[in-house]
View 1 (spheres, each protein chain N blue to C red):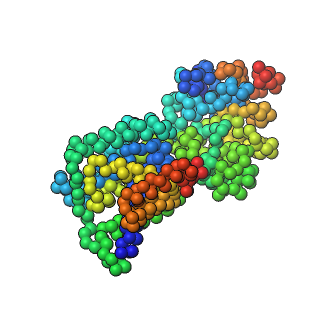
View 2: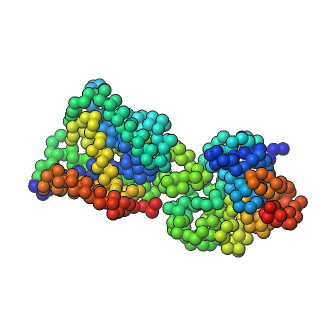
View 3: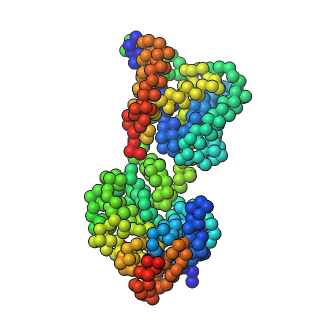
Length: 227
Length: 282
């Protein structure tokens, strides 16, 4: 059986500089792949290579067995790969409502507004006027409600209040339970370990750990983060 | 006398707003400094020359104008512009070369001499005691209605929101499924078509010749400098100030003073208020 998303010996980076080298991983439907590592080890590069903002030098990405490695980002979104970037994650000039409705929404926003009531209060406000944490939440909800099979999240919890990080974790688990495959890049270890079924540890652009979450003791995660 | 002055003002302002609209889209939104903008006005103005030399009926002027301009814009976008989004200075140089190429091409086909065409509506209308060409009055009303419609569309349409999203954050726009290459190409071609339409509308009132575009480019640029990039209000204000100043001083003092005043105004704005009167947030 093929995985929902296969990352096959992916090498790539920015222009002439490769950041990732021969990274392979896979995400099953209904599971969360937690990608971790120190700053600058290639987490964002991996997210962008899978999402299509960057193109691989070699290697491939397959969605349901079909190669998407050559497709531009908008076409990958069309195939069902959603993405929340780490920075510039909302359209500052558009209102909160426009940010939520511009892409193709899969479901109603109501359940998310129950968890993040601040968004509902600010629907007609330009997203750029909100705080960093609020913009993260907006981008997170936008990514969650899209009609996607694979969701890539790059540091969603950065600058977000702890209670809202808990809400994010609940949303992720629900979305995975509904069949989505999630690639989560995170620095926040408790959030990461709370939702991930599988861990992918990176150091200097290479895979140093690729295991079922239950087989990885916390000490091993911490030792990779302090490599 | 005064009513003619006011109607002349309205004519100058509305036609400049239409001429500058395409540049506002292409320069203001896509950040392509299209030095060939005036040449699209020129190509549009040649549409009636094309139809009459081929013996085609007058109603074909508009489709011939839009198809010709769209075709040239499409090729230009594919071959040159596509590689220059966000590279303003490079786009300036490249489109300057294209402007020369287009002028030469038109000169090769139609010659250097002046061409003139007659307006589709002849005669005059009496407005507040003065006689004024009916064609010009129809154009002024048409442009006002057109801009009102555009304003309404801009506030409501999903395409306008997508363009705003793409301009503000192109990577995120791609990530949510917007084909930014196609949207940019569409916006570029639309901008060029409005310039061509302006040329077609102006054709019966001017001398049509291959070099005519430059003056329209400069005045459009002045209007955007004064009014500010990125909003229709800014475009209207800029066109009002530039065309207003020029035609008022032109009528009261002389054309030279009108041109001098506009130039001085633009330099002052570039120096002291480079974002113009109504600048968008970015």
